[in-house]
Length: 220
Image (cartoon, rainbow, N blue to C red):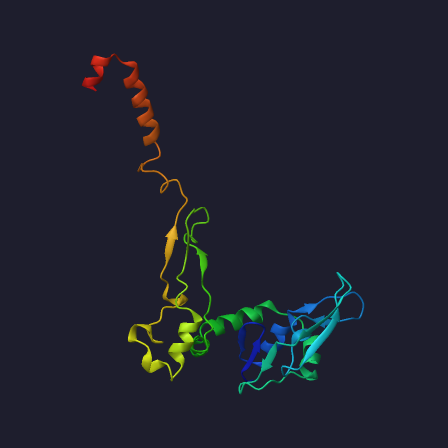
């Protein structure tokens, strides 16, 4: 047991070593024969000087890139080593384990608070408004909240005394505030009529009135 973290342009939290290995195993790249490679471990390293060199099979060019991905323990020390590579190569990805980890991560309020203080917001931007009804035309989005820069300033003890209370870390809006806006392309919101039959009834009435003599139209 133990807490582990990974970084691949985004931070992930793992509550056991088996969850960590299972998550990395989903990045396995299948090859014919005996060769094996992992898309996450290819760019994983321990410091800023680590780099990877590989040949692009599309263009044939040799590419040099830095290893920016990381694996941390609960003390935020990089622990990438050959043992992890061996365990990932023996593992088989299990989607059930990953779904359970994601549910556990979503309920971890301390983890989300840590990400917010570091300026990393959990994204909940788009979803269908009428998700209970698949035939609904309505879509909407959540509020994006404050920018990461404002959140970093509010979390910084040196800047906090100079920030007005409405913009401090407690009152800054984020994507979890569910400030929801919606727009609709359905026919009920695209017309001024309350019922579908009203436009046709008005056309029929207008056609009938136009066929009557002029002096009869005043009595209708």
